[in-house]
Length: 154
Image (cartoon, rainbow, N blue to C red; front, side, top):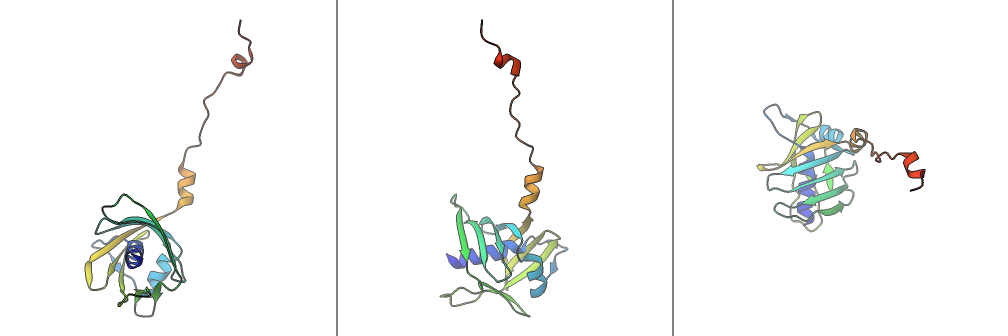
């Protein structure tokens, strides 16, 4: 389960691939992704929203493909490790450390896939929760006629 959360969170954070996708180096990927909020959709139907911090920790939600249950997940610092040559997930107890290919689609999205397995990917789209607050219309109460409410009934 932790492996799936880490893979989904990282892959989803990496975004959408298109013909104009730009492969990012590990340091470029860190700068593009770290600390930002991304929603993600994966090849297997898994969806969610999350944030990968500069220390490699992850926080967010995951809804595994085909499930209606959304789960909250956190993974500790060092889960995502960036070296000069790779971006990999480290989860204790797993016999492998999956590494990722990060492709920048545009200034707000990317695709993350498991290296060597191009079909295993997640598309990530950056979200700005503050922008959503400013776009909402203020809630208005229905107007009432003050004079009508103060007038006694005959």
